View 1 (tube, rainbow, N blue to C red):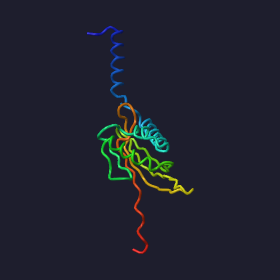
View 2: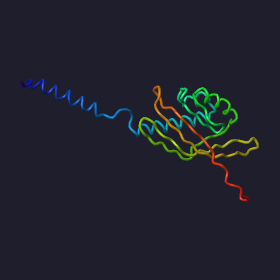
View 3: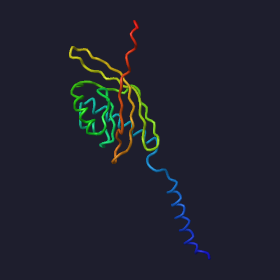
View 4: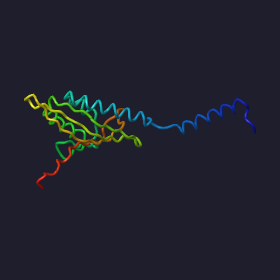
Length: 165
């Protein structure tokens, strides 16, 4: 049995739409993921440099599974713990400026792996500043409709061994 021409055309169009839909990429492109990760990094820097706890913690995944390993300890599990850590840390860094001196964001699957180096400049009160350099790694992803950090880790290198040793 042969279908009428108009039905045959409709069936062909529906088949093409179904096949295209099944083959179309799901989710954002790698380029869009990197752009979103870069924007999240800038949001974090702006919040840190403003000393804005709420804006800073808004960059984190609000979940008990979020991991944050900062300079002040062995790490926090969960958004509430990370917020408490930042609430204690930010006031001690009043006037400090954080900059990413090297930054990389690599999309893989539905997350972006980030890593790089940072410098923080802290006023000392006598007109000078103390500069600290470190490194970071993180995992970023879309959660609850926005890009957030699922995990972050900041550290500073160990000092070189004493020449006398």
